Length: 416
Image 1 (cartoon, rainbow, N blue to C red):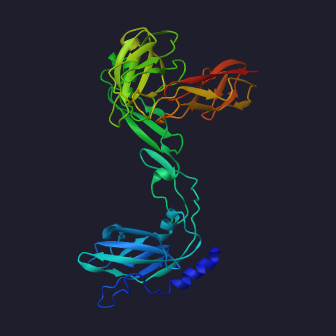
Image 2 (spheres, rainbow, N blue to C red; image 1 turned 120 degrees about the vertical axis):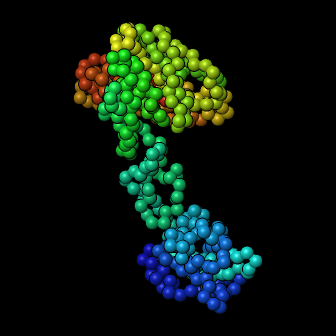
Image 3 (spheres, rainbow, N blue to C red; image 1 turned 135 degrees about the horizontal axis):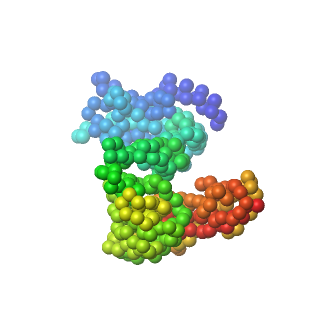
């Protein structure tokens, strides 16, 4: 049935009421009469004095009940507390059984110790809903999504909407902290554009603060999936390669000029903060006394020789996300598979690669961050978040495709 025909039917049937079905005609004695109507696609009725619950019944034109909803009286009330409403269109769409056409509905007011009171039966036209997703994102502090622009959309939970996911941030230090002023960091979601500012604590004593100590203070303020300033996958390539039920072994590549490496650990709760675990000279560290089947985050910072103000930071790793062993459902990625291991590209030209993280069989991964790409030498070739490699000057370099736990695949890029 066409939309124009149904619209005409709606106009006609809203003028009339049909005979109630079930418990008989609504009471006509006194002013407390339960009357139903269809208005803007919603079934509406007046608040019935004494009712503690309402039940909505939706039927075919032949009188066969196909859907119903029963709630406490206040759960149906609108803002003005004078009329109640229920989205019959959304209910039929949710059922997934109704076809385009005419349907009937009525309301029953339920009262303690009193016979139920039934409204008149109304007829309405149903057009199955087709989502029309907005081009712009909506967001809250944690997630983003796209709303359906069509009226009477039956999806109420944001988790079910198009593009739903956690924010993925790109961070910029707007103002570095000093002895007299707090620092300011701006985080912007790379997907939806949501932004927030984070305060960085004041420095205690400028003369005694090395670059390493300043960075450590900033790292302790990081929450969620935020990355530290100066972070990159290369040259450290930190990886949680060996994971036990109560321990995680981190490995990384040695950085030229680095004398020591600082290891940080944090839980994944909203209030968890990074703590500095150790200051070592090697490129392997075993974190112990962890809880089994629990998510953790790790960071490694490479520091040059020197003490206090001479401790220069050479490299900061990306956050490594992993879960300890012992979970029957969740695990970590075991490898990253790339579409090409070698590519040749000319200067100012591009080629695109894809990458997919692989989880162990019969296991799931709690996704904290999608697979990312990074060039080992941006002067030779750059790479975008979507894997588009652009040649900059003649030479060779490595492009890394890395997963959230640091497992990575290498693509050799030759620029001609």
